Amino acid sequence: MIEPERKSYIRQLAARLLLIQDKLTSVIDVRDMNLPGAIRILPFEKYAHITGYTVRELTFDGVYNDGYTIIAGDTRIVLYNAGYDITCPQRLRFSLAHEIGHIFLQHVEDDAQSEEEANYFASQIVAHDAIAVALLTGNWGVDLCIVREQFGVSWETAFIKLKNINRNTHAYTAMEYQLWCKYKQLFSTHRYRKNKFAISSSPVYVECDDEEMLL
Image: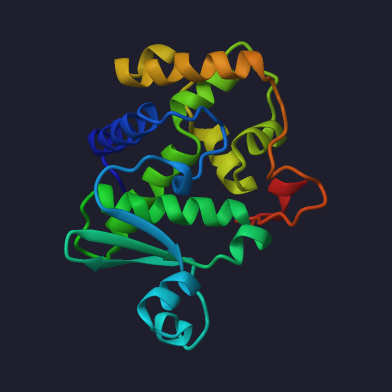
Protein backbone atom coordinates (compact mmCIF):
# COMPACT_ATOMS: atom_id res chain seq x y z
CA MET A 1 0.00 0.00 0.00
CA ILE A 2 1.33 3.43 -0.99
CA GLU A 3 0.50 6.20 1.45
CA PRO A 4 -1.38 9.21 -0.04
CA GLU A 5 1.55 11.55 0.60
CA ARG A 6 3.91 9.19 -1.20
CA LYS A 7 1.50 8.88 -4.11
CA SER A 8 1.34 12.65 -4.39
CA TYR A 9 5.14 12.83 -4.42
CA ILE A 10 5.34 10.21 -7.19
CA ARG A 11 2.72 12.06 -9.26
CA GLN A 12 4.67 15.32 -8.89
CA LEU A 13 7.88 13.57 -9.92
CA ALA A 14 6.23 12.17 -13.03
CA ALA A 15 4.55 15.51 -13.82
CA ARG A 16 7.85 17.38 -13.55
CA LEU A 17 9.47 14.94 -15.96
CA LEU A 18 6.59 15.18 -18.44
CA LEU A 19 6.54 18.98 -18.37
CA ILE A 20 10.16 19.31 -19.50
CA GLN A 21 9.56 17.26 -22.64
CA ASP A 22 9.69 19.06 -25.98
CA LYS A 23 7.49 16.55 -27.79
CA LEU A 24 3.78 16.76 -27.01
CA THR A 25 2.12 13.39 -27.52
CA SER A 26 -0.44 11.32 -25.66
CA VAL A 27 1.45 8.08 -26.39
CA ILE A 28 4.48 8.39 -24.15
CA ASP A 29 7.53 6.20 -24.53
CA VAL A 30 10.44 6.84 -22.17
CA ARG A 31 12.85 6.01 -25.00
CA ASP A 32 11.71 9.23 -26.71
CA MET A 33 11.97 11.36 -23.58
CA ASN A 34 14.69 13.72 -22.42
CA LEU A 35 15.81 11.95 -19.25
CA PRO A 36 18.03 13.81 -16.79
CA GLY A 37 21.10 12.05 -15.54
CA ALA A 38 23.11 9.21 -17.03
CA ILE A 39 20.34 6.83 -18.10
CA ARG A 40 20.68 4.56 -21.12
CA ILE A 41 17.91 2.36 -22.53
CA LEU A 42 19.07 -0.45 -24.79
CA PRO A 43 17.77 -3.76 -26.19
CA PHE A 44 19.48 -6.85 -24.83
CA GLU A 45 20.96 -7.57 -28.25
CA LYS A 46 22.54 -4.14 -28.65
CA TYR A 47 24.06 -4.20 -25.18
CA ALA A 48 25.42 -7.69 -25.87
CA HIS A 49 26.98 -6.43 -29.11
CA ILE A 50 28.60 -3.46 -27.36
CA THR A 51 29.94 -5.35 -24.36
CA GLY A 52 30.74 -8.73 -25.86
CA TYR A 53 28.34 -10.56 -23.58
CA THR A 54 26.01 -13.13 -25.10
CA VAL A 55 22.26 -12.65 -24.90
CA ARG A 56 22.09 -15.90 -22.94
CA GLU A 57 24.36 -14.39 -20.30
CA LEU A 58 22.14 -11.30 -20.03
CA THR A 59 18.89 -13.24 -19.83
CA PHE A 60 17.67 -16.34 -18.05
CA ASP A 61 19.39 -18.83 -20.36
CA GLY A 62 17.98 -17.01 -23.37
CA VAL A 63 14.53 -16.50 -21.85
CA TYR A 64 13.71 -12.80 -21.74
CA ASN A 65 11.98 -10.99 -18.94
CA ASP A 66 10.40 -7.57 -19.47
CA GLY A 67 13.57 -5.73 -18.59
CA TYR A 68 15.92 -4.79 -15.80
CA THR A 69 18.44 -2.13 -14.85
CA ILE A 70 22.20 -2.45 -14.59
CA ILE A 71 24.17 -0.02 -12.43
CA ALA A 72 27.55 0.90 -13.89
CA GLY A 73 29.12 3.62 -11.75
CA ASP A 74 26.89 6.68 -12.08
CA THR A 75 25.16 5.28 -15.17
CA ARG A 76 21.91 3.34 -15.14
CA ILE A 77 21.41 1.02 -18.12
CA VAL A 78 17.88 -0.28 -18.69
CA LEU A 79 17.81 -3.42 -20.83
CA TYR A 80 14.68 -4.65 -22.57
CA ASN A 81 13.34 -7.19 -25.02
CA ALA A 82 13.07 -5.45 -28.40
CA GLY A 83 10.66 -8.13 -29.61
CA TYR A 84 7.96 -6.55 -27.46
CA ASP A 85 7.95 -3.56 -29.80
CA ILE A 86 6.02 -5.78 -32.20
CA THR A 87 4.21 -8.29 -30.00
CA CYS A 88 3.12 -6.12 -27.05
CA PRO A 89 4.21 -2.45 -27.25
CA GLN A 90 1.86 -1.43 -24.45
CA ARG A 91 3.57 -3.82 -22.07
CA LEU A 92 7.02 -2.67 -23.17
CA ARG A 93 6.25 1.01 -22.67
CA PHE A 94 4.86 0.35 -19.20
CA SER A 95 7.79 -1.92 -18.26
CA LEU A 96 10.36 0.68 -19.34
CA ALA A 97 8.55 3.39 -17.38
CA HIS A 98 8.54 0.99 -14.41
CA GLU A 99 12.33 0.61 -14.60
CA ILE A 100 12.77 4.38 -14.90
CA GLY A 101 10.57 4.65 -11.81
CA HIS A 102 13.00 2.56 -9.78
CA ILE A 103 15.78 4.94 -10.83
CA PHE A 104 13.93 8.18 -10.10
CA LEU A 105 12.57 6.88 -6.81
CA GLN A 106 16.09 5.75 -5.84
CA HIS A 107 15.02 2.28 -4.84
CA VAL A 108 17.73 0.12 -3.33
CA GLU A 109 15.57 -2.83 -2.30
CA ASP A 110 13.75 -5.17 -4.69
CA ASP A 111 10.69 -5.63 -2.49
CA ALA A 112 6.92 -5.45 -2.86
CA GLN A 113 6.76 -1.78 -1.82
CA SER A 114 9.36 -0.75 -4.40
CA GLU A 115 7.53 -2.69 -7.11
CA GLU A 116 4.21 -1.08 -6.25
CA GLU A 117 5.75 2.39 -6.27
CA ALA A 118 7.49 1.75 -9.61
CA ASN A 119 4.20 0.54 -11.06
CA TYR A 120 2.44 3.68 -9.84
CA PHE A 121 5.18 5.86 -11.30
CA ALA A 122 4.84 4.01 -14.62
CA SER A 123 1.08 4.55 -14.64
CA GLN A 124 1.66 8.28 -14.17
CA ILE A 125 4.16 8.38 -17.03
CA VAL A 126 2.14 6.49 -19.64
CA ALA A 127 -1.17 8.10 -18.58
CA HIS A 128 -0.73 10.74 -15.90
CA ASP A 129 -3.91 11.46 -13.96
CA ALA A 130 -3.81 15.14 -14.94
CA ILE A 131 -3.46 14.25 -18.63
CA ALA A 132 -6.27 11.70 -18.39
CA VAL A 133 -8.50 14.34 -16.79
CA ALA A 134 -7.63 16.67 -19.68
CA LEU A 135 -9.00 14.01 -22.04
CA LEU A 136 -12.11 13.43 -19.92
CA THR A 137 -13.00 17.04 -19.09
CA GLY A 138 -16.04 18.01 -21.14
CA ASN A 139 -16.05 14.56 -22.71
CA TRP A 140 -17.68 12.40 -20.04
CA GLY A 141 -18.81 9.96 -22.72
CA VAL A 142 -15.21 8.88 -23.27
CA ASP A 143 -15.07 5.12 -22.91
CA LEU A 144 -12.46 2.48 -22.23
CA CYS A 145 -11.53 2.07 -25.90
CA ILE A 146 -10.84 5.76 -26.38
CA VAL A 147 -8.63 5.93 -23.28
CA ARG A 148 -6.68 2.90 -24.49
CA GLU A 149 -6.33 4.31 -27.99
CA GLN A 150 -5.31 7.81 -26.93
CA PHE A 151 -2.66 6.67 -24.46
CA GLY A 152 -1.62 3.45 -26.18
CA VAL A 153 -2.03 1.47 -22.96
CA SER A 154 -3.34 -1.99 -22.13
CA TRP A 155 -6.99 -2.66 -21.39
CA GLU A 156 -6.20 -3.14 -17.71
CA THR A 157 -4.29 0.13 -17.42
CA ALA A 158 -7.15 1.99 -19.13
CA PHE A 159 -9.72 0.31 -16.87
CA ILE A 160 -7.82 1.14 -13.68
CA LYS A 161 -7.30 4.72 -14.82
CA LEU A 162 -11.01 5.28 -15.47
CA LYS A 163 -11.97 3.56 -12.24
CA ASN A 164 -9.61 5.36 -9.85
CA ILE A 165 -8.96 8.78 -11.35
CA ASN A 166 -10.03 11.93 -9.50
CA ARG A 167 -11.84 13.97 -12.16
CA ASN A 168 -11.91 17.15 -10.08
CA THR A 169 -9.23 19.44 -11.53
CA HIS A 170 -9.12 21.38 -8.26
CA ALA A 171 -7.67 18.29 -6.57
CA TYR A 172 -4.39 18.67 -8.48
CA THR A 173 -1.32 20.78 -7.75
CA ALA A 174 -0.22 23.80 -9.75
CA MET A 175 2.34 21.66 -11.58
CA GLU A 176 -0.28 19.07 -12.48
CA TYR A 177 -2.61 21.85 -13.63
CA GLN A 178 0.11 23.02 -16.02
CA LEU A 179 0.20 19.50 -17.40
CA TRP A 180 -3.61 19.51 -17.69
CA CYS A 181 -3.57 22.80 -19.65
CA LYS A 182 -0.82 21.58 -21.95
CA TYR A 183 -2.67 18.40 -22.90
CA LYS A 184 -6.16 19.88 -22.90
CA GLN A 185 -5.07 21.94 -25.87
CA LEU A 186 -3.71 18.83 -27.58
CA PHE A 187 -6.92 16.85 -27.09
CA SER A 188 -9.04 19.81 -28.21
CA THR A 189 -7.09 19.93 -31.47
CA HIS A 190 -6.72 16.20 -32.10
CA ARG A 191 -9.75 14.66 -30.52
CA TYR A 192 -9.89 10.89 -30.57
CA ARG A 193 -7.24 10.49 -33.26
CA LYS A 194 -6.02 6.90 -33.16
CA ASN A 195 -2.39 6.28 -32.39
CA LYS A 196 0.01 3.73 -33.81
CA PHE A 197 -0.85 1.22 -31.08
CA ALA A 198 -4.54 1.21 -31.93
CA ILE A 199 -4.35 -0.43 -35.36
CA SER A 200 -6.87 -3.24 -35.36
CA SER A 201 -4.58 -5.64 -37.22
CA SER A 202 -1.78 -5.25 -34.67
CA PRO A 203 -1.39 -7.70 -31.79
CA VAL A 204 -2.84 -6.29 -28.57
CA TYR A 205 -1.29 -7.14 -25.21
CA VAL A 206 -3.92 -7.52 -22.51
CA GLU A 207 -2.69 -7.38 -18.90
CA CYS A 208 -5.96 -8.67 -17.57
CA ASP A 209 -7.22 -11.84 -15.98
CA ASP A 210 -10.83 -10.71 -15.79
CA GLU A 211 -12.57 -11.77 -19.00
CA GLU A 212 -15.68 -9.70 -18.14
CA MET A 213 -13.57 -6.55 -18.35
CA LEU A 214 -12.94 -7.21 -22.02
CA LEU A 215 -16.56 -7.76 -23.07
